Image (cartoon, rainbow, N blue to C red; front, side, top):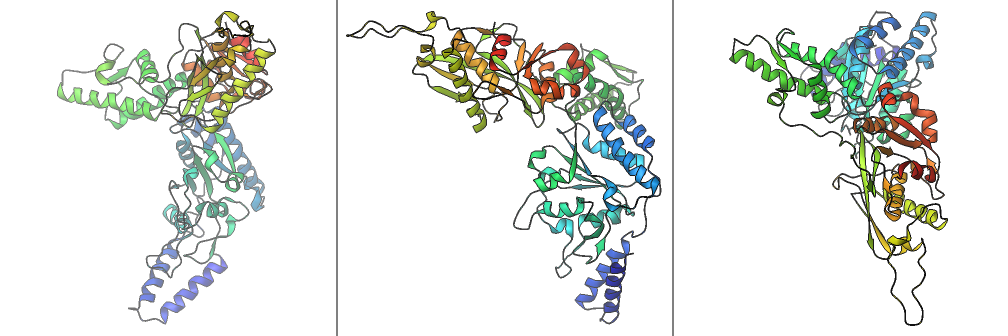
Length: 541
């Protein structure tokens, strides 16, 4: 143990030797010594880091996820090279990895694979709702029931000083009057500080630099900026239907068979049926619900095999699937068959994957007012106002043709003839109402700008919008299309809705298309746009 640890423990032993065994202080020191003697000061997992082992284990446990796997391999390649060359620089360890993505896409299981490949103990610390600083740092020994923090308890449980520690749900740490736990996490995760981590209960420094910390998060926006700065994010996105099918076939079905005590020779699911389960019985980015559906089928199969011993094999196909799974879940509504006026396919990002939003607009005779419904946030409301102004400018500059026949003529006045009708009258004599279903779901963000502009342009010009086109992009007052985030999730949602063409900002087209799965690229056409005029040219019939 280190010198200051030895000094502190020796002091407490001396103090205990001079005390009466029945005094309250003696029992407090006794429990302190019980804890510190358990700390594995010099014990470490002896297996040398081998990048090939890590790669093999990741490939064995996970289908697809090429980018995250590659990034993990690079991270451990650096650590292996440092170990081989005997570099002692404490800052040479690299950043802390944080797996970010929707629930059920494999963040925690990646950490499990890393621990298995390195043959190290895995310690999981759930941070969701944690608000007491002392939970991580330990309580001072003056308090009744004081104990070390979760980090030290994890080391004691692992019986080694270099385990893999998974900090689960780091985005859900809470702040309260008990302090801000994220401030403690700064010290734990900073490679420059964590070689002298001080636990309040122990009252001496511990070296955490050998520990491999891996964080997981659903939404990185809620992680405080100083903590985000110390982590390197590896994003795990939604799976495509084909990827879900492969995962179900290679991992979920065999694993669930084993859990339910069944054999491959007793139950089989046809390929078409498994694809139907993926498409119609789950709504998620990951595969957690898919696993539940497979388990639901196998439970019923296990019961059938026990009740009727004459049944030797059960085959699940499209004819009998409804006997095993009750309700279908309409995941993403498919595109409409016909082109309609004032209805546009928009694309949205949510924390559980992408979605297709059908934005609807109608016009009512009035004075040019704009009404918005659908539980929209402030940013989205502003996008609608910007879209209305942009379309007005297009009409005034004669870049959007308005048939004069649709404009109601104003009544004659006593002094003059009926005023001449101009295209600009179309937005003065109609109120607009824009609605984004479903009404109960809160929505916000700037990326519906071009979608709303297209809906307004369609309803005012009486032109239909192509039903097989979807779009995403932020709109400026001058009509420029700005880039957006979450493109992969949005395009996978469009793919599921059988949309053929997607309009995306040019900068996203140049930067993000390499991340899109090949099967999505093959079935869809992506058109880069920079101005609202280009959007209307492709979208309006």
